[in-house]
Image (cartoon, rainbow, N blue to C red; front, side):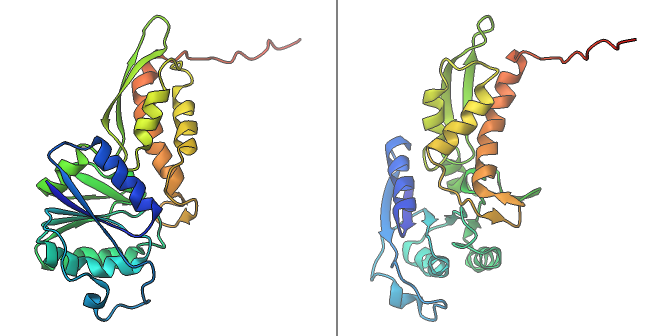
Amino acid sequence: MRILAVISGEYGQRHVENIRAHGPADWTVEVWRAPSVLPPVIDYPEDHLPDTLPPADLILSFGEHPGVAELLPDIARMTGAQAVVVAVDSEAWLPRGLARQLRGWLDDMGVVCVTPKPLCSLTDTHYSIGRRQRIEYDDPFIAEFARYFGQPDLRLTVDPESRLITSAEVLRDSVCGCARYVAVRLGGVSADDAEQEAGLLHHHYPCLATMGVDTDYGDTLMHISGNLLKNNVLAQVKPFKHVRYLRTAARSE
């Protein structure tokens, strides 16, 4: 699969490095760095684009400015891309109204566009844009990408006697590499502590999603991202956790 990653700063660069390090060997990942300064409204996208861009099947947009989204339809035309993934780890980088417009612009071109918020809500069939707001999609290129990167999916092995995690396999990493970082450090952790430890490790990585409260969730995207990982861990260690009961003191006469 031919991928073009559109970046504008360190956030996108970290994503690209993780994809190149852990993606399939037959993927080619090219990078175009968008201008760091863009006008509030882009009337002529060609003024901000290079003369040529490499052919691509899939565009990954990791822009840190809403103007980058306005360039994507022209980038899709130049590359011949059939699908676009636009990361929304900050509402400031892609406001919900612009995300909706972008999906419409690209749909009119016959290009599938997904805008997962946060990025690690992406699976090979759907993604989230808010609390109880899920959008399904059907595209082979995005699904192929999401089989390896998106909503974290760890496969834990727990020793039934010691109740310690003996191994953690990464079935699907988060795009930034956070899930892999957590998996490496869960070995030897008790089932009782695994959920909390996964959450702490997620924040230590650190997660690249914003700490500003997102109105579509009523929470920060960093917390939403952390909960996706913690829920994956909890579902697997829950059968091995000790259940603690509180006994009230006997009533005195």
